[in-house]
Image (cartoon, rainbow, N blue to C red; front, side, top):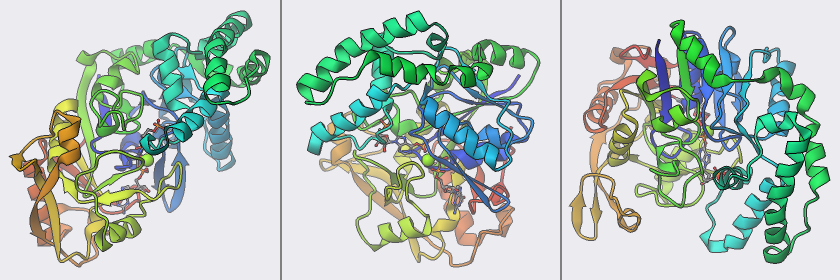
Length: 427
Ligand code: GDP
Ligand code: IMO
Ligand code: MG
């Protein structure tokens, strides 16, 4: 009864979608357990590119059941846009399951996300503007709308009314915006009822029964460790639990069921939005990583901030998530540098610090201490075995393996499903 978790080990966009897709044919269920359509996963299959936001990457694998768990926040218009887009390309989406307990992103929360960011000005988080933060805030405030509420019009009406009593005060009195009508919101949500009904189920029970039958469940995180609301660089984080603990609360699978935790880590680092990023580059190297790695957001198209590999961050992710195996992605992007810097520790106010500082102020002050490794110039995109990699690339991987807190079990050498070097089997 294997339940395997995939998490991002840095600030997102590590290549979780590709890793999930790679394992897809060997798993029975792929579960998205946190976040919403703030995520953007690009998966390339036989040269065809798919950009997924809300749907689990397992949707692309015939025979695999994709599940949207209770920990996810669902924008219903995006859900059906994605379903229609995939169906038009011949992908069968009928197996999708959606938790009765997942929360729904109402239009007022999309507006509040964008308006709040504008009001924060210099202090903004740089959110994706999809209504994620306000919807999770409603969940915690016990003001949220859940998928099951769509099937009881009276309850739905009462809940929307309750939420809007507060929201309209904020929208009109603080943000000087128009009040949102209860009826129009209810009507919009109800317009999806018939389409959504066939997908809705008790997903926690479904997954529990699957595990009892010895089927394999893959739990796929959106975002990443450093964007986790508890363990990330708060307040520059998303509003959900993107670490392996979140896989349990966001799916209803118990911690004792988790057999493996796979951390996805890029061979360098990127970040979108605001917040600290010690190895960030502002020079030609940063630009070269951005261009070579195609580092532009799948969701918002924003250029991603780029920097060198940060080993304390990887060790932190290994520790917080209990990573058993790392997948090191995008090694091919580093081809062509004479030497490659790796951050092995930080200098914080004159002191050498080996691990992620516990204080956010210290992390803001952290300066990377680099070690330098010789680069390679050979094209590695065709490598399928460790021995296919040039000696210096192998040495770079060995070094990261030694200092990242868990073993590196697979290496990405290109965006294609098959462009992977497997060192240890992942399932
Ligand atoms: P996710 O959000 O973690 O799923 O990652 P994204 O899809 O947002 O970003 C990762 C990008 O890198 C995508 O465009 C992938 O197609 C691409 N990618 C994944 N693995 C590799 C790799 O090993 N090499 C290269 N060159 N691209 C990769
Ligand atoms: P995937 O799953 C990278 C970032 C946003 C912003 C912060 C909060 O593709 O790795 P939010 O809209 O969630 O309230 O924004 O989190 N962010 C991501 N960055 N990859 C993602 O997802 C992200 N999802 C959110 O840029 O800084
Ligand atoms: Mg992404």
